[in-house]
Image (cartoon, rainbow, N blue to C red; front, side):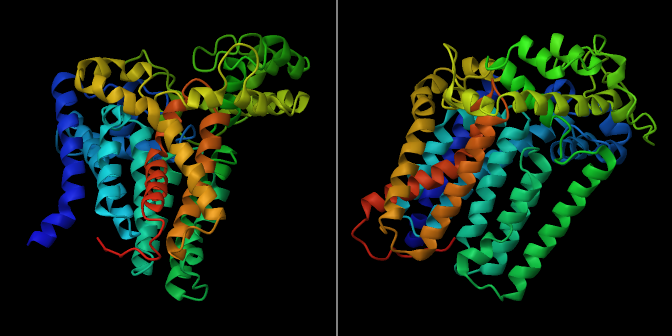
Length: 470
């Protein structure tokens, strides 16, 4: 009995801290259910209630994951707001649990695993983003789930591979910047981890994931003419270059090269608002698209205030944004590095990414309502982004020096480094202004990597650590 209590201690302590903070904020603040209507990425309650399947099949601004969650909740038998809040609260709790479980499964001590879980629960971003029903906390949960699957690979390879593949599919269906080529590469990670290249079950699992990804991406490419799961790729790049200050209106006009459509975008780059100033030549390319879905044909959402960004016009306009982005980057191939490292007196995208993750306008009301508990935790949120990266780099140094004596842990850390590198690039190069929010999506991976480094430093003289399965 004592053994069971002892093994459960890091899980129970971490979950207690999370639930305490969540309860504190939830009772004093509010769950942002209105996001279902006002979010640019949401198809809106009218479309998802009246035409859930049609709406999801005509979603060109985002993959279907987030809107599918909204649709299930809106069409469910219970109160939509309470149900959605419960879904996100559970996702946050599971993320905390999975961080601890992953570290224990790869042999980290009770102290290291429990401390990592508690610290993740204490980060202001953990609860604050759970209170905002958007991609951020869902991606964080799926990231944690994936590495939990990998941690099972040593003793339960098939189960671990199923969980890893499921998490990748989930990420692909939720995060538009999780490009299909990257997903296909990551599908073979379980085989790499245990180096059983001929194990039929692992090949079958990876093949299933491959099929799902190809079908989903094929739908987007055939239906919408996009090479990713979003029609916003070019628009986001141009927005990032403009907002970061590395591209001016004059640069955009020059890149437009007197093309009436592109010039209208360059003179007044209205990324999310009214389309009345956009030249008519930007439209008409997909006018014959056979769909009468509300989510595609209607210009505004149910409240008649928020734009329906999934409209046919915005799909047609996406090609112009892609062309403008391509032209302006051809003028200066170093634009993205300039945005990353910074020019002039403004912050770079990397600097913004390293800002505390709770610095986001949408979180401020709950941040204030959560005082003084949130106030006490803010220093942890300030130190974590840079601190976790420093520890990860120390882990990389230990990896290069051969300090990882457990080959399985070594490969897990290598995968965490690779996925984190991709996440860092996405967070700093494909957008500007909310870079710190994008980093939150890989916070669980950063926490796991940092904890592995700390465990290595604390037990560097041990040749082997005891494996304690979940």
